[in-house]
Amino acid sequence: MELDILIKNGRVYDTSSNTDEVKSVGVKRNKIVDISGVDESSLTAERVIDAEGCYVFPGLIDFHAHVFYNGAPICVEPNSSFLPNGVTSVVDAGSAGWGNYRSFYNSIITPSVVRIKSYLNVVNVGLATLGGGPTGYLENIDPKNFNRDKIIQTFDEYKHNLIGLKLRFSKDLLEDRNLYMEPLIETIKIAEEIGCPICVHTTDPVIDAGELAEYFRPGDIYAHIYHGVGNIALDKDGKVLDKIKDARERGVIFDSSNGVAHFDFDVAYKAIEDGFLPDVISTDCTCKNCYNPSKVVNLPFIMSKYLNMGLSMKDIMKAVTTTPAKIMGLEGEIGTLAPGASADISIFKIIDKETIFEDTVGKTMTGKQLFKNQLTVRNGTVVFRQIDF
Image (cartoon, rainbow, N blue to C red; front, side, top):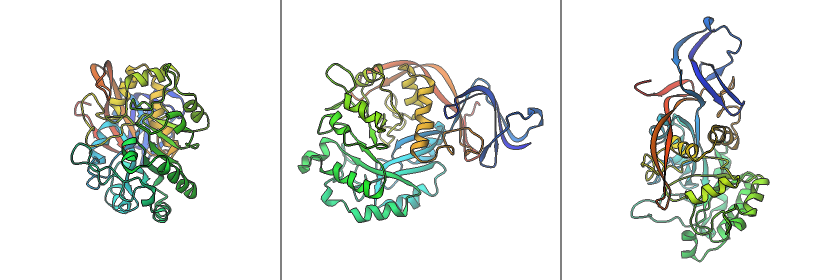
């Protein structure tokens, strides 16, 4: 059998099929091919990669990032920010609204090597006003300014890429405009008319976090679950609020979406101790936190933080491959190494290295292990390789 790429001797770890064993992975054109039962001596490949001592993962998925580069000041350039870190797919968390989504799609999404899906911000120009000064000009989430027809029209035109609507729902966005629950209620109404989920930034909400979660429907994304500002996900005894747990039971998805202002060790440790792990682990990557030491850096850094906090490899990898792939509607195509899937692959070592991890308020944890990417394959092509690998 002739292959384009043969990866051998690596520990293949794939939560979509509960695979954890040393075996070979073959790539032909842009697909994973089935080489089980094939005598390896009969395999030939243009490129043979020896992954001994490494994990072979599906390409990682960063489910919450901001990549409208040059369109919104906080955004990063996707290819350089993600491919070297083993991330082959990204979800943009509402950087663009209907007024500038076409520009985002044509200038960034279409030519990108990294696969990009996105949420459409309900604000006309998304996050285009953020940046400059300490916070920039916060977007106007007054629903009187939402253009329902244009939002629905844009979603219909780009439904092959858009996976939901995005709203940032924090006290600082509401109080200056004398708003309360109106933006969230209107966003849900529009989403129901479209038939799509919503993704909501929940840090420092105006109401109790459990009461907020009651508004969420199955498939909706509750972002920044471990934030420590204002109304948090824990009760006075340090247990996860019952209404948060109820929301998960009915299918609400909880994303860690780390960022620099949305992760608190005290909240995270208590929630995890209470059995409330993140469904999705993501970075909320922006130009302010990408490669920012100790805070965010990249997705493998955030994964390393959870590894050092005691989460299992299975829980971490499911949260950066299998689960986000399913939410994106791409289950079986990405986030898996099954035959027929897109040939998106990352090869990692877990190295011993003392590393400082810091939360929003400056509390630190010293970890002992790091995920370190060695090589990235995107759509059947090697797009990054460490110089010493």
